[in-house]
Image (cartoon, rainbow, N blue to C red; front, side, top):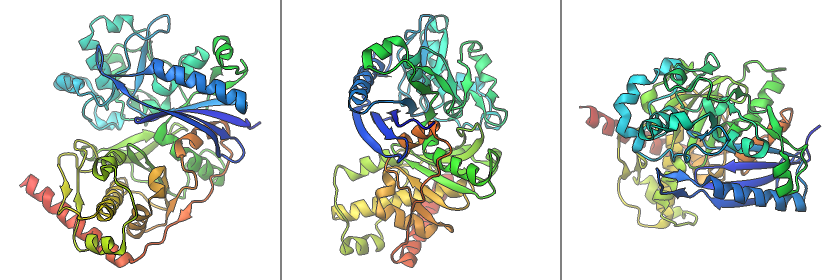
Length: 470
């Protein structure tokens, strides 16, 4: 039976959120948020887990009182785990994956980590490889390995707080962690090398029920102790999940679909995931391609860049709709070139910017939106994306982004109807038979002019690359 009201804990890199999703309409009935602020330390920059817990506990109580909660699901950003001691308390604060400390031991870690052929994980900076975080933490705090009794991936930390049960999930382990082999569905050789055998909590599928709400949490929130809690899911995979379910339903069961499609999850990160794309073993890890693992445990060729962060950096707080004059000015030759956030994305070794500065806010926003579409198109090409492309998250409301991408892809581009793919996708862990609603088909104005603009952007990007490699 489908739960009527599903509370979704949704922790992104920028904000922590609790959403109440209606199980039938898959609409959000209530939402509460707080900033996901990084605390400076000691011993290292870390996330405010206790502050989040107080916020989530109190928000659960308010939503239970106002609406009633029948089930709880969890979705979080990747590159994240929590180390717990024997009593279930923090063995150490949860490291911020953007902290560059792990780079200090890069050579030592590189000697340990398995290759791309085993894990589908590219070598990433700072703590974006979860294995690099753990290696650096154990080296920096020599007593930590002995204190650490349980390693849980981030969605399952909140599951543990709610139920008292330990787990990891395949989507979080399969998110460029170096800890998972996506082709065998087993831990990689790095788990043994880091001394984590027996400490890494059991890997489960995202839709598995990790347990029910504990008596202590029930007393604090008014929830019933029979309230089920799903294992949880990595946020980009939560955006993919509704379409994966629909494809499997259309294909009459959990087997590979013969109708390829792609989902682009947008937020702080833009993550392109191609179902039916190229073989993940043929990807180029130097261009921030990787093999994610979907909620069914299957490998998914993926590529990404930090598009949401780049949007905020370039936008500089301005807003407004571009005018026809802004459009003409940008088409005349205002280009934003990669990369704004270096060390990630298809062009990780470059520092980009405007070819010439826009004179108006509208022109700035238009060139930015087109840049994000061009970068997304590059990501889709790198992973051999075929079939329709569905845009999830905030970029699905950016008409200029959608128009540019729509005229570049050989198959339709659709904007998802859900404004928040991660929360709805996570809620669907309780209702996998639900069919995803069709998105809004995008039709571009002046497609030939946009394609010409894209061709000039690609030429400038290729010329910059040639200069770097000369």
